[in-house]
Image (cartoon, rainbow, N blue to C red):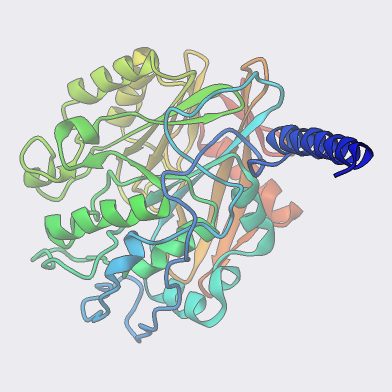
Length: 410
């Protein structure tokens, strides 16, 4: 081979090596990952979505036993489910970044996937259950939390001598993801309606969806474990417990799996104090009070004081199935009950609470009014929102709800 040809080939090979190296360097800096809208990572890998459209329509009332004859066996729903919202990922102990923007959290009250929900969801998906305005608020929030007032399961034995018992096929867990839910409280008086098998299935189903759960577990330690989500460089912790249990045996200290009880508040108060050092913002969600009563019981206010003193930044309540008032204790708000959110065919008034944490750690709260008609929850219009603001002002303690729904202490 002529000398000139060898030199030319040598030069070409050097150029190819340089171009290949440049391409690798560019790929390392620009290619490798899909940008998330925040720092959260999912506990479950994205894959095929859970089956959504379980056809189990029936003519029972929403307040009758739910799913007693549900014969579907969708065992994979809790194992191989994935979020349709790929940029809304959650998990514990993820890497943090510098805080450069505000973080938004949304909280709602009781959620029950029973007959009105199923009828609407089977017919039109999540858009037939929640209107677009409210759905977007929940989905676009960095973290959304609700009270899940039922187990996900097709197993278990219905509790005897209990007026209302609930159970929902695990395939419907996909609806929680479509609502933007990241964490739920299971500490309530319906989560063991079908026994411990159904509660175990609920854990599996939520794990499969990448949804965290607080207030129940397969051990005392798990039930009282703070659930942590990191967003924008801050750790947000979530704890839950119930002061309403049908029988003492539901207490996780009596048998497992079970619910964390706060009849004797000592364990829960200690859990709050321990969690305080593990997160920047600590949220407590408790099941308490009397049904259909707009004023909290004296014991609720006493417990709230203890929770705040132990380290809670905010306390949310449920169980009354109606809204209760708001109170600031030592500068921290207590929302005694958020009422029903997706629960039956009609809800006269309810609300979500928007909690915004700015980059400096300052926290603000805003009420977003809602109501349900024909099983669909929708955001209130301006007039309805003002009426809600006035109503909450009338039942609260030293609190002002401004025209835009912002909540401040007087």
